[in-house]
Image (cartoon, rainbow, N blue to C red):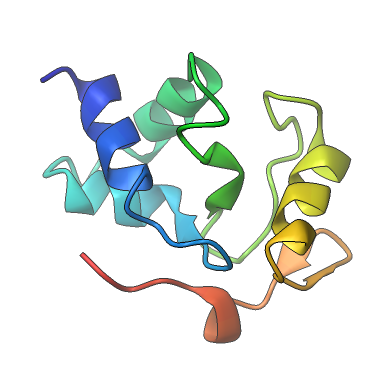
Length: 101
């Protein structure tokens, strides 16, 4: 399995209404120092509806400033549609962080 495929498979396990960070994904797939590579893989996501890359935020809960599929406003809208509160471009990690897998 390629690095990108590993990222996509992990992200498919994140439930609606929850978020994960780039670093969490990197650690989960066994590449703990590859957070930036995770972001690059998400930018190349060929199936954004199947692989919910909108559920990924930075370690502070900040949305992606250049969300690959329409910008930060689109990411915020997708998260809000799943019940995630977004305030000033941030998600409360204490409330919405998924720590499964």
